[in-house]
Length: 500
Image (tube, rainbow, N blue to C red; front, side):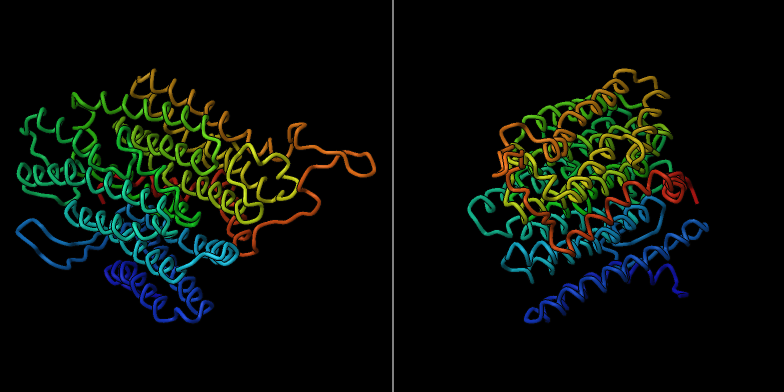
């Protein structure tokens, strides 16, 4: 297939909108509706893979759509971090759609057409964010993503869902209006340029105090990165169905947040500049506090999705910390952690949804002995937990290694200790779940009629619906394969921030 990179970019952004239209038009035919979603999701991934091949070979592309004002353009461009993000999002769109088919049907969810259509629109926004050539374009689609995912968060239509949706909108739109937009306007006024540029856009004589304040505004303004104290939207959004939680935590929203932060630090400020600003250390320690505090809160959560939500807040802060270290190893660790966390966390949410569909259990305290009934699901949960913790043989060990190396290179010994303590906390709040599943407490063991011990509710193995189970297996295998074959991801991550 010999398509120009310019055409590839536009097809990648526009095809999800075609999927959304096709889903709406075929609403009376669920099989056709879901076939359209899977077919176009697969097509988008193939097109992004073609762009990946071109990036590896040193090719770049620039697409200009419209000029609003001089210096304010809606334009798109390829670079390594963009392709990395788009690869993850497009592949996980396929897997999440497959999972959603099993979950939504088995759980008898209402408004499935609305779900698939807004899912596709959200992916279109993600692709536009990924390939944005400048901060103005990224900001537009960053806000589109917030609005497109709101109907997904409030999908259930209950009062609790509506309340969660209001918190979601209030925090994400609020941080954008109060911090992100003023920072964008100030950047344009000071630099006269919002294009993502290797080394940053600010002149050497720009007062460092202005830049230090701007950096704080950007970190707080990019609410999707869930840095404390602007993190509450993420647990509030857990009222959504599990496929939406997967979209929020692995495919789209939170990854769009840390991606935006990385693009801003690397291409608006420049790594050298960030390393010298007086507010950088404050932001680094804020990220460290977020890592530890959210991990401690996660340990107290009995609701499985709530525990995973606070885990995500902690893991996002890893990415923020890595890029704010302003070192090559830290940037490499952050870039790789976007991918490693995506596969680990989506697997955990898939497992949580499978448990809900099969056993109708949402509280961890209720899951004793469940591993005997759902062995594949619980094994998948265990492997994905290892990846989040950062233990071999899973991909998460590579990104955690480079993050530790980044803190070592910059001699941030406290941050290095935080990363290690956090991994221990990850063990404390994740591994007891599969352990409880396979080795239940005495209270979950009853006497069978013949006098032998039997696990309550485990008479027969009953896994999630087949499409959902296949999705779980795919993402679990990815967690392991990324440990043994990290080189393609590593090569792409090494190119981040390097001039073509």
